[in-house]
Length: 484
Image (cartoon, rainbow, N blue to C red; front, side, top):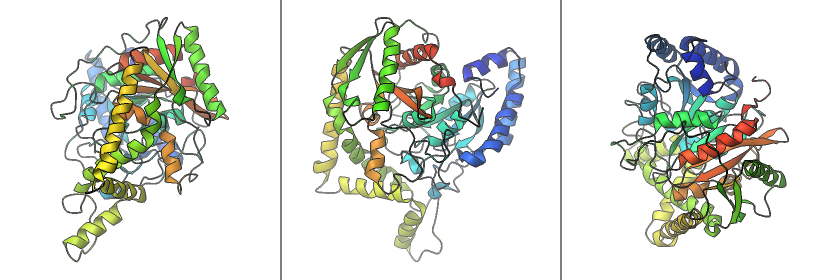
């Protein structure tokens, strides 16, 4: 059962080839057997999952077939889940039991999804390798000496290893798409505001966006249909009708205009990564798409702009974690100042502290105009570049990541080099656009991915492009050795 996609499992449940309980027990057994190697889960909710599976079987017997009825899903441990620990990969929230459930989790549960557990992640979603987690690094199932990417590394690794048929993630600068590429799965970052952020612990509020990870574009379409939509509890959630993402996924792409930015193929890009992306473009060209060269000049400034804006917002959002109201609290504080200092210094890891310090500095008097304001001006230029491009093209395509999965610890002492892992993904978040990473091949036995970027609320179009590519290739069906 674990070799089937989410959409195939949905059909199997409706045909009564197996029950929701059998399906759930199968994936729980795989988690128990394999996750000691991968460390992709922080919490496994076996009893809750089996109870939900029994309820799903009763619903199916009664003819109640909602969108996700009986389908097991894993949620990134950044989404609050009532009665279940929500750690955000941090010591600061190691003992936090959420008193409410995030809208994304609630909407998927309302559609009948079963929660297998909560996946490991970089602490407070800050990282590109899943090495900053308080619970230790997640390991890539293609090579357990390598990183799975981050921050949604646990979600991507568990999906690639077939420990779950679907997962949720969040993407602030590439944190769905980059791990999807490094693990050979499909990951979608929706338009900013397409999916509610309520109950999703904030990193950078103007950049964070929840989205699905699946084995195929069709799986992502199915999950996005369940999780998208307006939420009055989130003032940034847009009241825009949810499209029929599955219904239009198989449309012909003849005549589709694909923009190929020169900035996504710089001279220093690894030749194998560039060739892999060009092979994917040629496949789409075979199906009648037209390739159009273009330039996005301001995109080259996206990394420095992001690493001013995101830390600035993080320093503000993380100010609430002070050892007073909830979360980690130091032992025997001498006074209030000691409580604040030691709770935060002991509760946060090194990368989180680094970004808080950078963000606080960028927002401080005398530096706000020099750094934060200027970064926001660059952000506008990036958005304008994309707006001009989408007057001439329908989608934009290039590599998702400049490299395949690197060795654990290889960049631990070089944060700037680590930040460059998101060089092709960050601009999308700064502009608020939707983008998807799809598996596009293996390079020296490791997965590579190609990124499809669409205009605002054009998730259906990029899902269609990815699906047509996956109909002609089988990279999304490849399973890492030892997990088949």
